[in-house]
Length: 181
Image: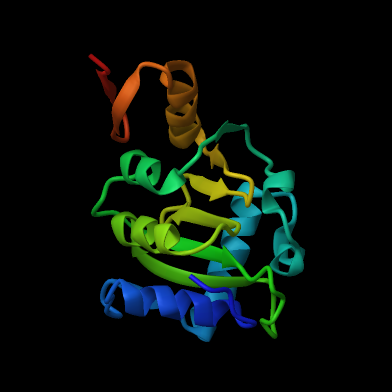
């Protein structure tokens, strides 16, 4: 995908390429967006509302977090979060073309979001449980960070078993794996 001057246009191009409908993936309205982002920032970072204009949320996480370097995160995202779970997708507008804040907020199921991420170039994003139980973020260097107890445990499991895992199946409270044979 060719990068454009407006980051949201890049996201819209990926949406068209994947033939997604607004039922699959939607931009959160202006009336909802700030409240959701501020709730996310207050729950997972030390930034509070000032984080709306701040880059690198991952440098200000207030809970224990766990990270792992991955070559390609989209496939793992589909294993970390149940495919049917609807989540918040926070995409950092690293081109700084957004008029208010540094982030675009979308809503969709993790499978759709993972496919969208796979369709684009690397950028920083966060995926947030709609119940604010956990957060996943990937920086532009391929570091996947989990915050919140359930997600931290899953990332720890990945780290300790990455050499033996072909396909990881992680649900909310159980962790199993298929060993390469």
